[in-house]
Amino acid sequence: MEDLKSEEFQEVMLSELSERIEELNNGLMALEKDPTNKEAYDDILRTLHSLKGLFGLSGYPQLSSLTHSMENLMTSIDSARLDKVILLLFQYSDELRRLASSLQGGKTPELLRFDQLTQQLASFDEFMVNLGNKLGIKVLFSPDCKVISARSLVLLKKLKKKATIERIVPPMEEIQAGITFKELYLEITTQEADEAITKIIEESQDVLSASMSRLLDSVSTIDKTGVIEDNQEPLNVRVGLRDLDQIIQLLGELVISGQFIREIGEQQSYSRDFKENLASYERTIANIQDLVIRMRLVPLETILTRFPRMVRDISQEEGKKIDFIITGKHIGIDRQIIEKLTNPLTHLIRNAVSHGIESPEKRLKKKKDERGMIRLAISHEHSDIVIEIRDNGRGLDYKKIRSKAEKSGLIKKGEKKTNEELQQLLFSQHISTAEKTTEISGRGIGLNIVKQIIEENGGNIEIVSEPGKSTSIRMIIPISVAITKVLMLNIQKHRFAIPMANIEQILSIPVNKILYDSDDRMSKSIVVDNTPVPLVDLRDFLKFDSSATSTIQEKKNATHSLKQHELVVLWRKGTRNIGFLVNDLLGERDVVIKPINEFLSQVGTFSGATILEGGQVVLVIDPMNFLETKINA
Image 1 (cartoon, rainbow, N blue to C red):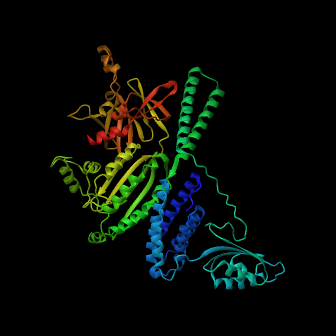
Image 2: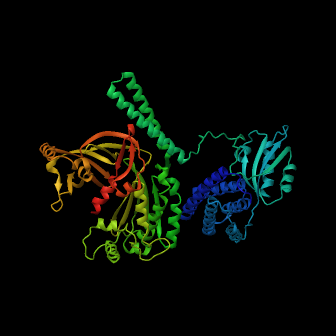
Image 3: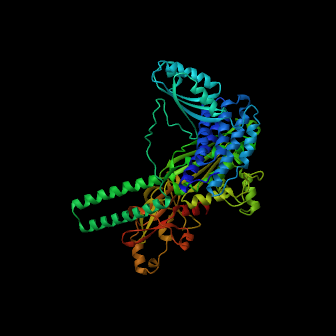
């Protein structure tokens, strides 16, 4: 087996191989569900044909030959044994995935299992393992021939006795109609020697010359008119994530410089032309910003294609019948985030199959359809992406969760807990509702890992369940982690920032409308649209030395001049919200958020920092940390 010629070639080959594997899996699952699905059948043949050409070009003749045999088997098998062929092709797909994984890791793949597939293929006794070579034949007729169509039909009739004719140019309809042409192009598959095919062609009347070549490429470049196709598709260029990150950093510096120039202009009353040019500069920067953010977005489809096959395999192993539906898969998300979503989605979908959906017998007893349904839905919500995994299975068993939490010592026996609080316990380590531990689920670590990964990427996770009917798990994740729009806050004469994406509204609340907990005067809340919202007074929470040095007289003056209204920033994530009491608002900014040192990150109050004009460092408040603290308090 020849080595791949370069890293670039190997990268392209692996990318195409991965796409073809997913195409094959999707086609097989569709055909398995409906054996009369002609579109799925054609898709499988097209994918096998592409794989055959890919392996031929990449230096894997054994795999090209095996794939060729699989392709011919699909075209010739009877419907009675279609199930066996589909199973064989699923095994072939699994081995292709193993091959891709080996190549990705820089290992030399072993083809032993492909040899085993070849032996299974041979068990279909009416087929040979290698069902022939594919040939491209170009036949040129004499210019004096007046009946080229008739001569072509005679030649095709003779060739059909020795080969399978897969393609004809011009098409058969035009030949039969007697349309004038001088050259006949054929693609055939045959077990005969090349000499036998050549002899048939040369003995045909009015044939001036013929050329024959062995076909390895999966896509012919000749269209119905015999002209090479010119696909006017846009060219794509691969851009490394590191380069995009550097562009984002430079763009952030341009944004800061623009804001600095604007402040100077406002202070020194520059001319109208200066202000107009500055506005044009800012619009250009905003357009570049939008473009770079779009460049970082990758369709979620790139990681979702593997899950239909996974659901199919697990449901068959557990004897369940499940319809798996995906919506919104073309929605894009930052490529830095998308790479980290595969494991959380795998955990949640496996849990839905193994924990959520009941067996057909149990579903029928509950007067449900024996086929369960799992829906993976992706949608936009403000500047976030919401990924929801919803099943119509058994729902959460809160009694079982309580029992396991008590045994684990997470809660005291008989301690009062709402269903929402019990749901949060599922994210604790070693809590699982699985009846038995399997390789698929039930080890009590899945949801804990999911929550950790989602929160590390600025998101959160919610559970809504109706016992006996359904469970819905929602992951709310920011679309991009590049340039972020923030609201600048004034808190005790110090500047802070808070992400704009989830700010629902700014409220001016009369001080007498702020509610205090009778047991804890520091615990405050307000009522918005008949819903209680917990409050965090950032002026009390962020204690500064300057406030401690105030004189008694200054404090008396401050008390005397207390505002009649308080400014509240209402922030929402998913179905939960929280309010922040601040002194003043300083406007919106586009910023690049940078990581903070280990000490500050452990505090949890701040998610990062940004640098303003003049080098001023502003800490970015992490509302999610406050929200979790309030909810779990």
